Length: 109
Image (cartoon, rainbow, N blue to C red; front, side, top):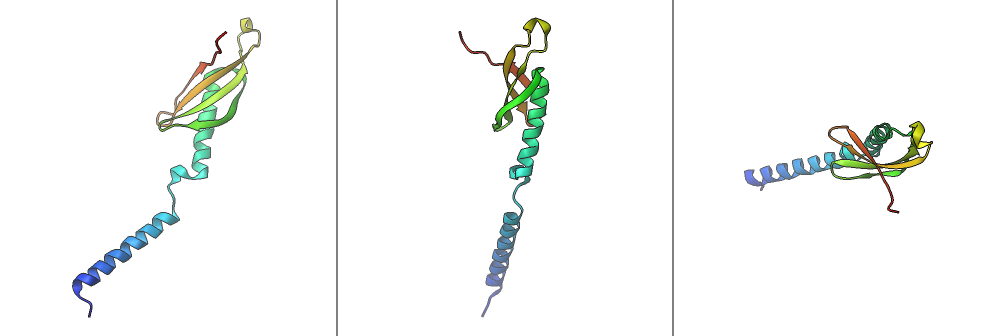
């Protein structure tokens, strides 16, 4: 014989299982391949622009941090006095702000 308490317990268990199945069927959008591609695309575009370099291109894949994305950018200086020299920049793209900050990477002599 089923009592009220056991009926309530089995109903709760069934609801929890159904909720778990729903969550498993729909993974978080932030971790979907399309969401990562969109984030990295925005980061690359913002960083290429922030570098100010001619013929700018991203080097390798972006590196994801908790609140920012790191993009390495290579290109050529646009200023005439720089004589079209090559340059490499490290750029940080803020996920929340959508802002990019780029700084030249230099190697010690």
